[in-house]
Length: 287
Image 1: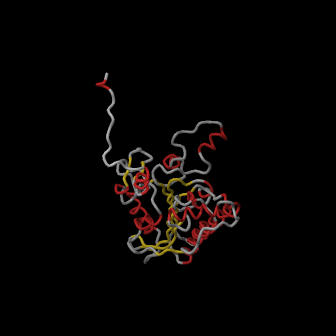
Image 2: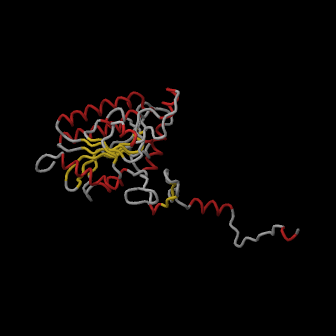
């Protein structure tokens, strides 16, 4: 029986628990992530330029500044309203700390970045919402920045391209958050009344009050593959109607089939499609 008895192992250069903790703390948190579609591990240096999974081409989260840099002509982006900072207008308990943590983690002041740029030499106003910041929920500053985006675009006769992602209204700001829906929608209407072009690009997820307002007001509405697009959450709807919904319910392809989206466009084609749309809707001699 001694033949099968486990032998004591000898560790050469043993590491103390304190040293183990030190080594673990030196490993970056974002060194790898799991693809939500194929479940394979992706090392940070494997992610493609357009932030897609190298194994299955699933569209991963695209940080706002990186997306802008990827889409527009090099060096052409000029940010607007970068001084606007997230606020706690109702002094909601714990909300200020939540905003500070989001700012620290994302290096953003709020959940949307706006400005002007060029794509293939054509000028445009651009906005990108970033779900890393409190799920890109729409608070007062998000609403103000998007409102100003359309105001500046109307004044300067620029088309607007807006990449949208949101978990809906930011409830820590109460009615001040909800009123942003009507506020932005009014400016979108003024922009369109001026004969200017607005392209909305729905990314994952686009939900809540954002979907009920400016997300669906585009002259052309595009979406990324498999993006969740809807108003109330799937589980909430199932509990309300007491019925099971289809697996693909609220996926962009399902929403497209039901007539609410003009086209599903993968990132590999977005530069070309958006450039063509901006050019087709430009005034003679450029915008």
